[in-house]
Length: 244
Image (spheres, one colour):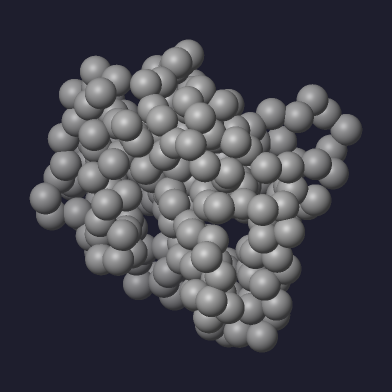
């Protein structure tokens, strides 16, 4: 198994420790990981803003960088979903279609491909899990609570394998944090109110950390926490699963 590691641009620029933790975690689990050096943004911000026609260059570059791997893994549900649903190329149609079938968000890769049953990780803190919308409703890595169906959470299952962790029960398990990519720019006030509500749920249940499979959501909530001078911290799930 040869895996291409896709690290989204905002993680590369602002949270490089998340990319490092993802790499280390995969290698601990025996995965042969490669990091294409020329990778850049996947084009999601442009597409979300209505400028999908400007993503042709990023699409071609992504295909050039990640063709030939058995799997592509990313610590971002939103970026993984964008590639899975929207990557296309007139020049390299077949290659693009293949990549769309081979890309996985980190927790779904660990659960569905590697079938991880135990982890040697330690994280003795109270943690609230934020179920990011792209992962939950797009990639379906956790069940939506409005459905009358058996609940499940791939991130939650992996976190339950971590020694010492105490998962807190939230009042609204799958409420949106309000980030939404460019939504937080075009609808700033609504985004902030949603973020404050999401953060308050974790604080009210005495969480010491908020975790998620999307660093973009955590970045949004981190800003709200810092402005409120809250001691609660954010941490990507890869960092917890890789903690020793």
